[in-house]
Image (cartoon, rainbow, N blue to C red; front, side, top):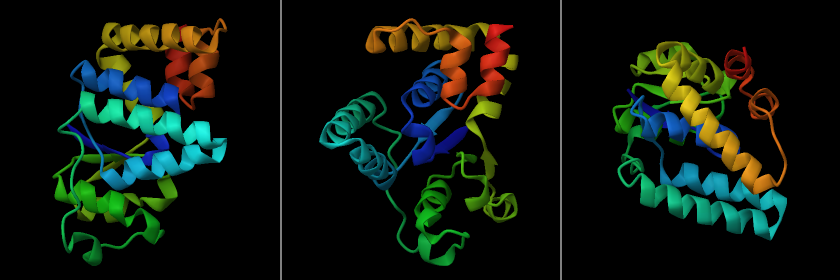
Length: 180
């Protein structure tokens, strides 16, 4: 399954690491555009200059690890599309141009299912998606979550537990499943 990751699922670190961990385990092929990555860097700038610098470093690593994921914009595609928020058209355009199967986003209202279906796409939310992957391959997703938890503890200097970490990352269904 080829899935375009919207900026809102790349920017929160834990969510991004869970999704890319699942992709690295072979559960799906992640896709994005240079513009999606630039939106991430600009959003991180709200944390100050260090936030943007860190985001740009993470983006460089992302590009190195996933060189085939970045898809170029397709000329003319965006002009024929419509979404409630025109600022999101570039996400839909890259999904269409890359022959993606879905857009992974937290912004349900900006990506109406009917409009996406007209383009052969579905909209999926990260929590439901990861929970579904866990149900299909629990050991794989549990291993990804364990690595993400260990890295969160290492980077923060705190001792996180799985459920609070994933709930904070807006992954409550997955948090509950992994804590049961």
